Every structure is written in C-alpha cells, then in structure tokens.
Image (cartoon, rainbow, N blue to C red; front, top):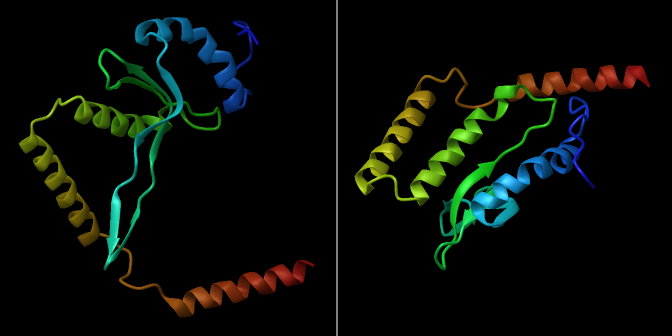
Length: 160
C-alpha cells in the first residue's frame, strides 16, 4: 500500500496514520539506521515493585517505533517515534517524549553516576513535596462514596 501525499490525515485513525506517514518517512529513517527498527519497541522492562517478600514488575515503557544503530554486537537506540492520534492535542505527548529522551540519554552514558543519583534524589524530593502539599484526604470518605453510589443506582433504575 503506497503512501498518498494528498491524503486528508485529519480524520485518519492511528493505525492508518502509521500506514500513511511512516512509509513517507521510512526511506530517510531506514537509511539513517540501516533498516534497524522495531515497531512497539521496548524501552524499559518495568521497575521492580516490592511488597514484603513478593515482587512484581511495573508497567513497561514502549515507543511506537524505535530506531537502532548496530555498529557493534549490542544495538544502541538512536531515535524514538511516538505518535498520537488526532483526538489528542499537539503537545499531549511532550512529557512522554521527554521521559523517553532521558531514557535514551541514560542508556547512552550521557550522565555520570553522581548525576544520576542527584536526578533520582531530586525526583524523590519532588514526590515528597507533592505528597506533603496534596489536598487529598489521608483516607477516602466511605460514607460519602456509598451515598454517591446509592444516588447513581437510584437514578439509573428510574431511567429503565
């Protein structure tokens, strides 16, 4: 299926955008990375989450397309394509893109160990501050939740 340069992309679904736009870009992207690309490329396997003696993995981070350079036996990620459908604002994926860029920089060895420790400590301090300044109650108001659920059910059964 060839790419139509005159197509109306505004109402295209995300899978259709992949089949239209990526082929337009592919010759240039594939040339840069000598054809080494994965769709839904895995960036991280998910952090380990411990609870007592048990653990599980957190959510994996995947990009829509990951381009690699295989100059050695180990492939190095060099670019990530993260696409959003037309129902999202243009900037909707910016935070995600920043996270992915940081992951690439860490994997590329762009930071000294001490810098990574400082980055982690800054994030922990930020989380602590957000927690301390949160307006959320310590525990949910179960009575209020039950009242809302009862009201929703009453409204629902009235409508049938």
